Image (cartoon, rainbow, N blue to C red; front, side):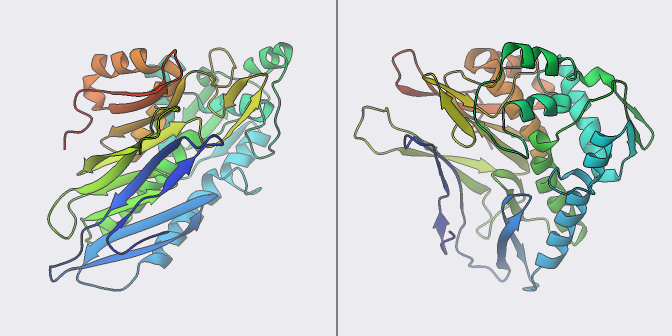
Length: 341
């Protein structure tokens, strides 16, 4: 729900632990107007805010772009390019799919396969795919599906995406929403709009400034300790020409045998995420990069993830972790420049 001046969108898990990404919008005092609209797309929400002298809405243009991307990479649309590839040996990609696949392959190589869009057989096995179900699969089933997960078995040849192993399937959900936010941003730029904030399911991209000439502000809710009566403390992240994405165990998960299994799958082991991390928020020069690396950083864990960031300064990544310590208390840790503009 949006409010005129400030709003906070909460995401909560079954035990009430809170994490949020919100957008704080300044009240317009200039000649230009703050235009905003929202809706549903890609199985989630979207919000677009921009500053312009023209008060006409760009909703139709944005929603047409969503439809184009769905026809390319939606697993819920039977005729999409990604579903055609998953059913056959190859597909002719459009520019949306080609951009996402090439970026995914770059991240896979850089992380030695920690990010891998061929993860779909394992995602389905764990019940986090199009058909949802709960229950830990057998080790034999995990081993069998792992043989179909290997980004090296994909070949990009001009416009063609080709699989080298029969039965391989891809799932771009770990990067596609970030790409969509960036794509909406490019659409706005093409229309001469350079001050905007786009949010597609919590993956955001910000450009320029708000109506008061300040960077767009995103609120991060720091959850209290589980045994504390204190209220969460809001941290403010200023975004200027950046993307931000979040991954965590508070959205899609199931509990079994005292263990919480989250929807992020480690391609190296085939196991669903069940570490002590509640969430990781990642900033990057664009939303697609942030979206891809939030998966990597949550699998690596707090210390190894922050070490990865320090060892790859050219990526311009920053991360904010919320996690539980050995005593079950909620803690946070972040990279040195996470709150820098």
